[in-house]
Image (cartoon, rainbow, N blue to C red; front, side):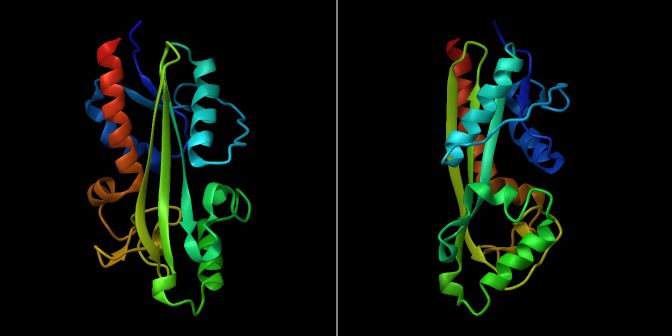
Amino acid sequence: MKPERIVFATGNKDKMKEIRMILADLGLPVISMKEAGVSADIVEDGKTFQENAMIKAQAIARLLPNDVVMADDSGLEIDYLNKEPGIYSARYMGEHTSYDIKNNNLLQRLENVPAEKRTARFVCAIAAVFPDRGTVTSCCTMEGRIADHIAGENGFGYDPIFWLDECGCTSAEISPKQKNELSHRGKALREVKRKMEVYMSCE
C-alpha cells in the first residue's frame, strides 16, 4: 500500500518550515504530528541522537500505520564542555527554560575560553518508518564554534550563539534558504530523502 502522506513527529513550527521546504518534491503532503491529530508522551531513553529519532518514529508509526512517519533528534555538542548539552539539548536546564537563558548560561560557562577551544557542532539524526515497517535513517552535522555573544533573529534554539566561520556570522543571521543548504537538519533531510526515494521506488 502506497502511503498518502508523511507525518513528521514534531510540534515545532519553525522546524516544520524547514522540513516542508526540503521534502516538498517527494510528492506527498508533509504534516506535523499535531496536524495529524496525534499526541503521545514518548520516553526518549536512547543513548544517541540516532536511537532517539528511531524511538520517536516507531512510537508514532504504531499510531499511524498507513503513513510514512519521520522523526528527528538534534542538538548541540560543545567540545570544551564534553559535548554538552548533546542529546539533552532540548531539556538542558529544564524543558520550559527559554533559549535566551540557556544560551546565556552556555556563554557564561565558556567565558574567557579562546575561540580555538570553542569548537562545536549541531547534530541531526532522522528516522523514517514506512507502512511495511521498513526504515531508513540519516545523521549529519554542521560544524562551527560558540560565539562570544548572542546575535541574529532568523534562527531558533541555539542558533544565535552558533558561529559559522564560512559565513562570518551566527546561524541565526543567515537566510532560511542558506540555512537549509548548510544546516545539520538540511543535510540530514536531503540524505534521508534520497534514501526514501529509493525505498519507495522499490515498493
